Length: 197
Image (cartoon, rainbow, N blue to C red; front, side, top):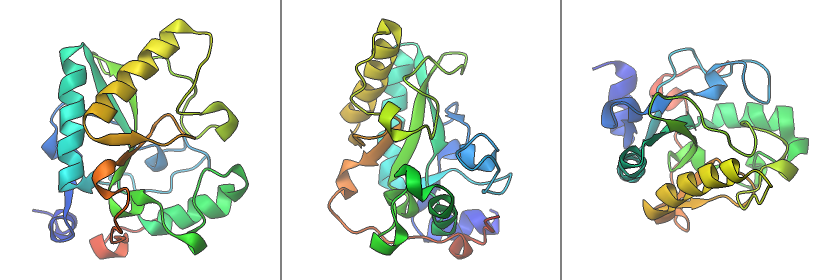
C-alpha cells in the first residue's frame, strides 16, 4: 500500500478506481483541459471520495451500466490548496466558492463532478463541456437539442436516485445528500503527501 493510499484510508477516503472497477476517470485538473489552461493536480493524482459517497457513486454506475451507459469522473476530492488556486484564477466566473466563506464540499470528499459516457467510455453530448461560464451550465438546462436533454436526464436520474443532489448552477456537479447539511472535515493535499502545482 502506497503512503498516499494509507493516508487516504486514515482520513476516510477511498480510491474510486479500486472501488468501482471499469468506471472512467478523467481528472481535468490533472490536465490542461480546465478553466486555468494548465494542470494543477499531479499527473498521478488519486481519485478519492469518502467511503459512503463512493458507495452511492457505485450504485449510480451500476444503474447506468444496466442502460448501456456509465460515468466519467472529472473531479472528486479536491485539495483545498487546489481550490485556492482555482478561486484565485477564476473568482470572477463564480464557479468556485470563496475560501474566505468556506471550502467546497469537494475538499471534504463528498462531491463529484461527472458526465455520461457510452459503453465504450466515449463522452455523450451534454449541454456544455467542463468548467464553462455559469450562464450556460445550469443543472436545469432546457435547450432545444433533444439528445442533450435525454443524456442529461439519464445522468441526473441515476445520480439523484443513488443519493446525490445536482448543483443548480453546474449540471456536472453532484453533492452527497448525506453530507449536505453536515460539516465535513477538509482534507488537505499535505495530509496525504500530495503536492499541488
